[in-house]
Image (cartoon, rainbow over all chains, first blue to last red; front, side, top):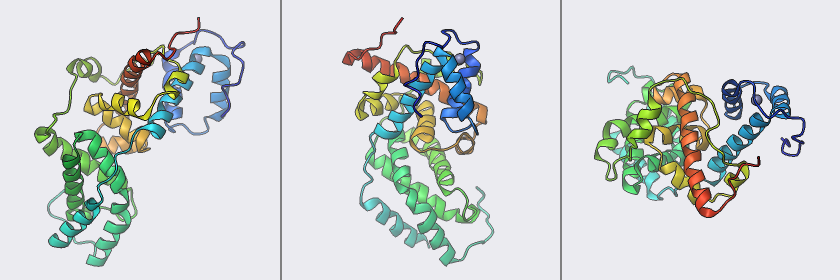
Length: 89
Length: 197
Ligand SMILES: [Zn+2]
């Protein structure tokens, strides 16, 4: 999605219903809305608060998904689990 | 889970399910456990206990269904029932956070942050992790499940035993709290958080 490039000149600066819009945008980002592409495109092209909110929310999700430090799983954990399962079999 | 279970799977089938459907999730399980307990040994114990329980109750698992969600639910319940109490580092609960945000599914979806997407993108992994870890456990949990593990609202609702509306509102609040923390970091680091007015 290359919506960063679009000019914001045509966007209105006040959102008609922030609460409803933002809830919808967040659901879309979480993958909970089907066929959201067209609706999303239109919304983001028309409304500056929605546009900004969407990109901030998207950035938050992206950094969480891609940058959140992962803890290395201790090597012996899987073996130790299998050993204990053997004992209760 | 009931103690009395029908015998459904043969020993061979049990082994197949355990190795083929349960064990592949050990990385995610450990990461979840570590972010709940903040302690390597507690996380190991918690994951181990979860797998032992999963094996013991394997007959109540439908082969081919969502094993990851099933395992996460067991882990979450074990954490609440056992580890939360004895944890070396008790879960940091910011009571004000919880009280202010906890009691209703109604959320006003307003923007609470003047943070900019670009300053979020510049953040380091450690900053993100620290901000996430500083959230109260219920808020931390929904973010882990949704953003780190990719569960749907419906799956989260089953894992956490809460309605989907609560999942949605809790997530929204959790992300707002996270934004506040990140914004604090951003200001300290001198990232630009000013609004272009
Ligand atoms: Zn709008």
